[in-house]
Length: 451
Ligand SMILES: C[S@@+](CC[C@H](N)C(=O)[O-])C[C@H]1O[C@@H](n2cnc3c(N)ncnc32)[C@H](O)[C@@H]1O
Image (cartoon, rainbow, N blue to C red; front, side, top):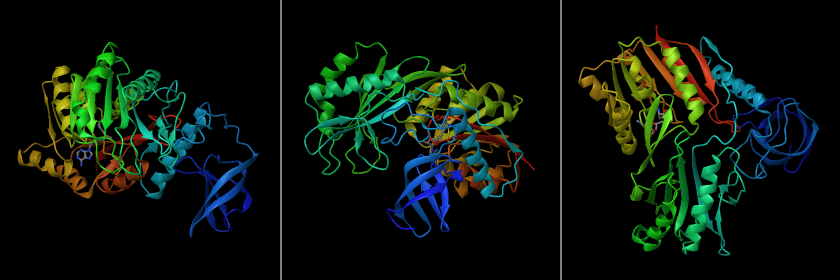
């Protein structure tokens, strides 16, 4: 097989990015946009030692689950890799992916539920971060990054984004241009505006606008005040923040911030609980499905009200506070200081009097609880995609909690960590919850019980 070959291939599986997988001449061929069971006329565009990348030229035989993507930008945008697959089939494919990932670790576990999907799997994202760029021709663009690149796709409408966020981003962009600001140029690190980040409370409608700028003097630029004066007429806008990022990295937010208007945070609900959310704090992007996820966790944990609970990687305290009425005492650890501030405010907001959240990494702070002779009966972990580090796993094992609830957005690291924990714990039924319809991502939750 060599570059530019055109071959008809049978798709035998779907991969972790929902791409089709075929085998040819002892090599795996990844074909974005192809679905298991299809025959695809494929053009080989990249050849590597162990695998090739192919491009769909023609669908020779079609899977029944293939649908026309609703978004005009689907082919170019990196956001919705599954929009060509009917939603129930997306859920089946994601289940299969989780099953295969767990099988790779030869993990013993009690079973795998069907993926819990979303009623209406559109317009669900409560947060968006739009790059603002200036081309060499001097044209300013707002949109999303194209697949595997930093080219901007200016889309008319995003079908997974909340529509009000989409509309507001365009309004803010127009105002910025009107006042003479220009987009960022990555090549030479020039320009004014790098990103517009918008968060919106799903239930409250409250909005936060964060304008990420490339120059410190924009913090005191009178034109920003003029923009704020226009925007604040919209009563749903509760916070307008400037964030400074002068680095040449892909990081969106910089360290320094200036609140131009409002409190610096918005409020939203998950179930009966209220949460303050700031610009830098993590909050699940799909509020409706987050509630489903937390309820599954709560049910699986079967708390009796007497437990000491550790909420690790806690964000704004969303999981801990959601479980707080079923435990005796709640302790949380989170690395992002702004999120910890929110978590401690959220305790008060929800009249939770049995909780405390501390700032720092789990691996460095968990020992403080040991020193204070605080021993958890239950630990809930919800780490970022890289999963748990060995040090934290060791602490968890040494604490010997009766139960560990593991919430994860990365099936691979979830399976890897469960394999280690399964030496000491029985792994219960894994429940995948679709927090990211139309994308390749999937959330999983499981409860482990001490052997
Ligand atoms: C997937 S989020 C979960 C947040 C929260 N449990 C929720 O449901 O909204 C992971 C969180 O872990 C935090 N984090 C990342 N590395 C950490 C570490 N080493 N120690 C503590 N927190 C960390 C991130 O800032 C983020 O808030």
